[in-house]
Length: 262
Image (tube, rainbow, N blue to C red):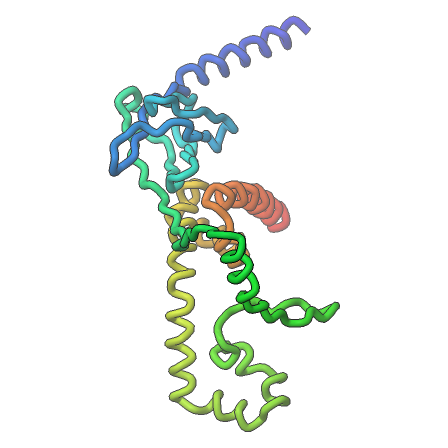
């Protein structure tokens, strides 16, 4: 029993010494790239250790790190940054400066008019044309705005379109000019959406978040198979958290596959 206690104490001491040698307190400052003003209350997350801290009013931050930990810098008004801690970053601790690009939100133009007198208000109110509302049919989902159906490749090739309008079905599927129109339209329609997704979620970023490389990284991205609507609407931070959850599932699957193949 004494030997077991002595061994456990030795193991604990060795582990603590290892942690003390391998860990370090990363210190740095965060600034706006254009104004060069310090950024306050930006959240710094050590994703690998489930630790976090915030920058102060001078942009100064400190967070406990180990080599190969993934750090995420996330805050309102700035694009999210992430990187893996390496020797270069460790060497810069204390003098590390990170610049952030402000995230610009486009606001629609607003016109402010004076109310005027009561009679002016009454006259303007009576002149307002009622908004035509389409009837809501219970059991049917409202149609979301999007590209015209005739440019939708799935719709044009669908059985429903063939039954509803057989002549149009053959025309739009066989006519080279119409097929080219669809391709050009979809490229124009999809390009801005794809660009917005690529800014938040791409192969390089996933590699940083997960530490995976080459074939295993490709395999993981295919495994994630995130819904396109999720990638459009989610913030980069939400995508990172979801990626970490998928990584746990991916590793469990890999372990299960290894055991099955033995």
